[in-house]
Image (tube, rainbow, N blue to C red; front, top):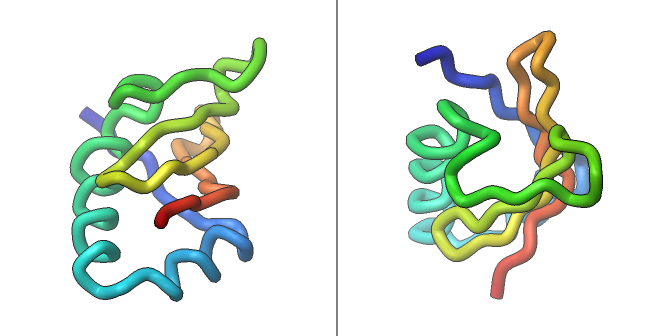
Length: 82
């Protein structure tokens, strides 16, 4: 299976930078092991009528992202965790 490339918009990147190390390690493993190979699965749901605009929970972290099929890229635009 071909994995999608992961990239983060600036607000999501700032949230990642503020995560503690253990959560960041689990989150990164979940993103690369579960979401990148299958961004339309992995328990994700579309946001509205656009299948490429999605939300998922990865390692207890809620993310919103866009899938760009043509360039096999997932762009995470929002990261929410407690």
